[in-house]
Image 1 (cartoon, one colour):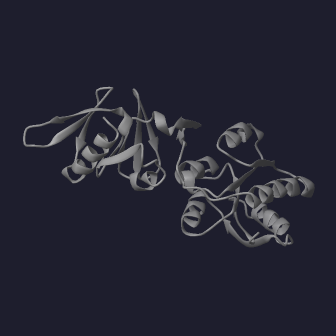
Image 2: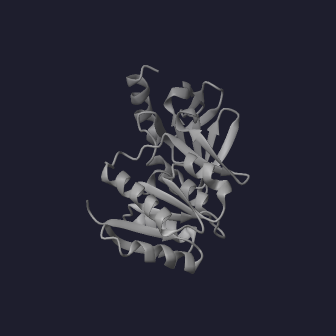
Amino acid sequence: MAPISVLVVDDESGARRNLTALLRPDPDIGAIIECDSGQKAIEQLRTSRCDLLFLDVQMPGCDGFDVLEMLGCELPPAVIFVTAYDEYALRAFEAGALDYLLKPFDDARFRRALDRAKDKLKHFSPQPKIAERLAVKTGGELMFLNVADVDWIESVGYYACLHVGASTHVLRRSLLELERNLDGELFMRIHRSIIVNLERIHKLELQDGGDYEVILRAGDRLRLSRRFRRALLDRMSSKGI
């Protein structure tokens, strides 16, 4: 197995030094990078390869769950939460964490967590980064949405609004970033600021001036850009819609 690249994220320098000191003697560990904030971790993970992430939960400005929400499928294959608060454990495992280290922990407990990460990485084979669920932080809680339940998505500045039935959820990722994690067989961009679930389309309606609107089964009316019209018609025809 290639040397394991590790990112340690914690706003407390002592906590970072402790983890780094435990990791360095291990012959399977390669590069170790430290970040003192969730935002810096996001920037680092978007630009560099990382196999194993040690992630603190409570950090000012951008906490561990913010990192999960904003990175989505771009997260490393192995994520271990490290925190002094046990109340986040269930949410961490629901979000796909491999392990949950509760501070203070001893060397033996750390070793068990690291061994679990090694075992996962040993059998890990990269798959296309297609999201099946999306983590959305709302009101201090982390909610998990099945991607197939999303009717349509619109861009609002640097955020993406997910429309699910009568509910709307704000995801702190750009539409372009999110689009890379969506199943191209199910979702399609129909406007520079709109992505639609093809299964939700009821019909196209011609408007005055020659433009079309996409009418969803729930009644939502969405703008269809001329740039995407032909591609949408071809897709609807191939799907028998």
